[in-house]
Length: 314
Image (cartoon, rainbow, N blue to C red):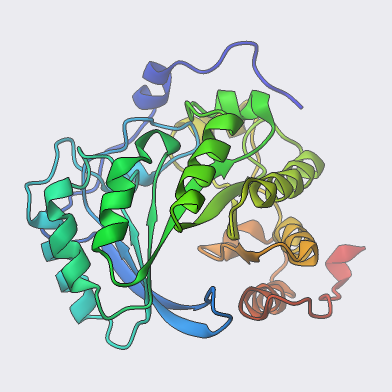
């Protein structure tokens, strides 16, 4: 493992950024539908809304979500307007992911005064999934949950259980913080899922797989019901510099397959592999579509399927 002696200063992370995209506080910067294996075991149509709001205060090393954020908090009423707009474009969904490029329970991002209006908009759904840093999980999480008719699930970025790398990511979170947040939510009947990074900076390919597998184990031991494995990419400025300096390289789609297989074999809960821009992690056009289809099949079925055989494996 190749970790610099000192963490990269926040000012350095910010200085290497490009320009933000222009976004509208009354319009989500994205929305789409996907199918997902639900907690019930059914495959359900799921809506994903990428809410426009204030940038997350943590500014993690690997994050590029700041590109579609604002520098100031949105006015009260803007977030429900965004949710309503997106829901009108996604008829028939049963689950809704409200992702806001940070923490849903950060009052500077999502005004708590908007919780009742949001809850009213989603009352006919089965479940609502939001994301949050452990720092913001507390009474506001319980308040929002109490307002909802659907079940609430909170996604938390565990990232990695390799503690030196976790510190270097500028996450400002310990493994204990993660476990305490999961325990708090579980104790109030709120399900949790973890985001786990595959090959964050400072790891080799083999180390990336090893620590992703260990992170899955830790997340399930902590009490989460679901994990999503996310292959790390560049493109945010500092990650590109780290790549030039030899501290980062994106993982292979084959490694993503391997970690997904491992997670499913654990049998401890649902495990998904993130397929966003999956092609950038493949170096073989001959087997990419087959590998992508295999990953998507395992995501939905939560069971193993035969491996893809290709000459690139030799």
